[in-house]
Image (cartoon, rainbow, N blue to C red):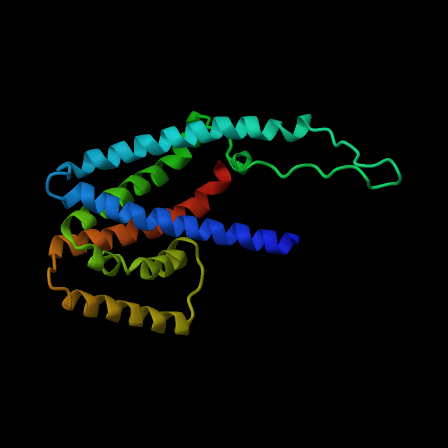
Length: 216
């Protein structure tokens, strides 16, 4: 199989895994927030616990990644035949975990990342509150304004210009948001507000990640 085909399969598998995890998280969070007998009436605690688990996963992945990064350095190609040049075996592909850096804490970096951390936590809080107060079917409608905030903050914070065609498309998105809200049977004002706030922080998270990523 060619390198291009391998790359295509890798990208497709990553996208499918993202879809699976994302959809599963929506239903699991909905169950935790509003399912009788299972739900935990403490959305802020759920958010805190999710952040703690995320930190632990990143730390463990960093340790595994550090070990995986050392493996290629200790590898010595073994010739498959002795009858010509280029007969040595190809080096193995790096492990999936080799892309994870070791988690390290420095005060100077933490000061730069702190605003992004607040935005990330706010994003999860409003995301969980939105799931708590609205139906899963309306969840994506309540958070549909993310692309609108993306364009707005890209213009204000990053100075990226916006074309007229993009603005017209945004009006279509906003119109769809109001139509979807009007057609929701179990409409929740506070759930919709939480969804809009979640969209806002999702957009800010992507913008600030782009700005702060070079610092880490």
